[in-house]
Length: 437
Ligand code: CTP
Image (cartoon, rainbow, N blue to C red; front, side):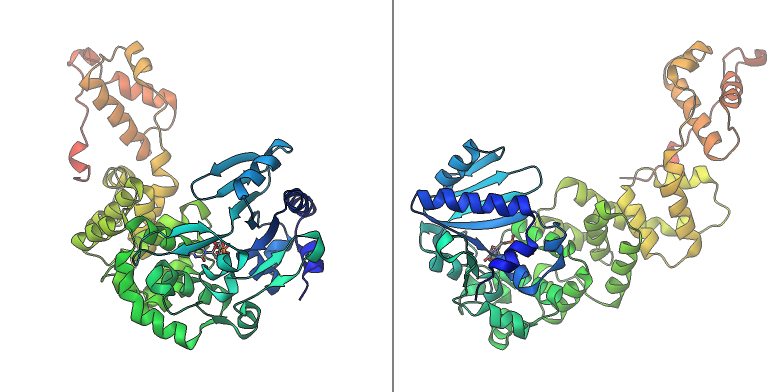
């Protein structure tokens, strides 16, 4: 099958020219270049994201020396080069896209879960080391057979029949991240696991224990970047995979409903952390600490998840309609906003939801107009007293007792030691309301 017309139709023109140029330079070196991996799969599927130019990363395999070729290309173009001599790979970064060039290689695994030992190989070797048949196809970019599909594992047929198939029975033991990847592609594409693949996936699920926390977390992050990650989570639960990551993870109707609501918030930057915080919402503190240790989660995400569970225990305090804005603020100010948002999504009480949203949309941005310098000019002495005056002003502003700068000035003056000759009013402190850590 020749896909030349499809390539020309789907790839943005500048990218196409670049890829042809690279292939031309390779030919002069006596080497061949192929398009591989996800882009071949998506070209065959006619994925519209290719056409709109949304997909900017291409994987190229070089039968030859990918690093030397990339160095040569970088010298004659605007690309930034990042070479990994040890792995025989190089990244060429252009303004609008990135090309990953890899020397065709063979991989062997010393033991399950270990990173593979790599040696130069042919294109066929390189395709055989891949995860699934639909990801193990290549398209030739050489002038002599430009556009020719190379499909030794019948990926095109599996695409047609909607099947996710591993290439050999040891695939999941070699690399158990493929268990998570299989389900991610299955659900993204609306496919099914091929029968033997499904059997081996279940048999080899314990192999996930051989994978490092960082790699498991990376795969989870990829899942959470999918359009509907809840489908993947639900399916992983059905297959018995989720408990292998943490016995407390669930893929039930609650997760499905809440994940859908997260997306309606339209806060794409917060999406992955909100999903993580929802995933651990039913965990005990101990369960969460095990999860954090297993996945080696970065500090900020770990804090957001801990805050989520801590705030959950304090929600009853927020279930009073009569709470003043300042009381809400002092209850919530120490928590990561993602933790507050997660609790707003999780709570069934409209009063709690309202208070949490008020904090997120308004209260956390409230600032006094006067600062320490201005208070000094008004005769408030620096030191702990000034801190308390600032806090009193802030509280008054939160509660709508002052609104203009003149209001704040009047209130601040009432705390001057000589105020009306009564030694000044004493500002109140709110620190007792701060959540314990
Ligand atoms: N690959 C693999 N095993 C892995 C990771 C990657 O075999 N554990 C191979 C697959 O051939 C895959 C290619 O490397 O197609 C590129 O990997 P990646 O960028 O993760 O995936 P894409 O196929 O590009 O898919 P996506 O649409 O998810 O980006």
